[in-house]
Amino acid sequence: MFEETTFASARKIELLEAAYRYSLAHGLADLSLRPLAAAIGSSPRVLMFLFGNKDGLLRELLERARIDELAMLDHIQEPSNTTAIGLAAAIERLWAWLATDEHRQLLRLWAEAYTRSLIEPDGVWGGFAATTVSDWLAVLAACQPPRERDSEKGAARRTLALAILRGALLDLLATEDHDRVTAAVYHQLALFHHRRAAVPRP
Image (cartoon, rainbow, N blue to C red; front, side, top):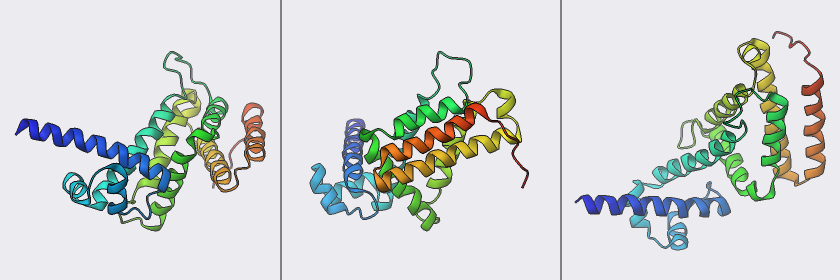
């Protein structure tokens, strides 16, 4: 029994990774078990057994994408550096990663899941958008000096940083105009470097 459970667990991990690679190339919105199973060397019956149903598989694929996202965010602040790098450096490092061609598939998958989460807030996609906002804000907060991090202005500044990155990313995914979008990011980056204007209260 133990060997069967171990085998099933190992097979599930193997198929999840294969399904994740497939979803990076083909997206998640129109995912169908039959073509997916054929592409990754399995069968719909096996996928149903291991993941329960299509929604169960989608949930695990979304969590798998989040693991990649968090791994990327984890490298923004070097573990050996105990001094907060600041929002300007965080924006620069994040954009350098986001704008790289090799990450385009993951980011398209992220954009698809983000959008579906807004359209179908009660379905399998529900909560993905809010969770990813929280994840990114937490990383940006860790890059701020404590005094700034714990202030209302600091919260507004990291929210603005996230808005800049997210807007630029969606523009880049839509147009592939790397130079124009990067120039806009660096224009805003200069403002983070040189201006700390008060944020008006709503």
